[in-house]
Length: 91
Image 1: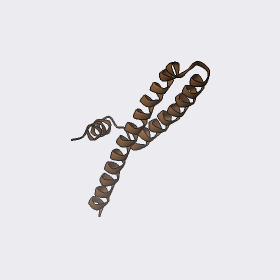
Image 2 (image 1 turned 60 degrees about the vertical axis):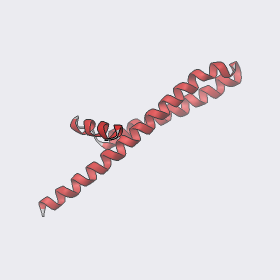
Image 3 (image 1 turned 90 degrees about the vertical axis):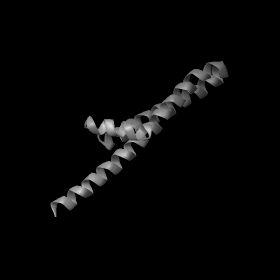
Image 4 (image 1 turned 120 degrees about the horizontal axis):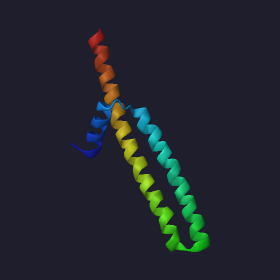
């Protein structure tokens, strides 16, 4: 089983929903843009060596955003499938 599948199962057990992870992914995406803009400004004024710090933080938050999105899509498909099975059970 893949890592994100395991994380999605753990999140389901904790009562988390796909919307929680989509919100976190958006928050991390916004942080990524902020860090990349800061990296560009630091590069312009101070050089590329100092720009590596915010650029690295931008890469890390981009990774977090992608990971949260992958977990959210797995949770979303799980919620959809469980909702479909609930409809079959009620008929």
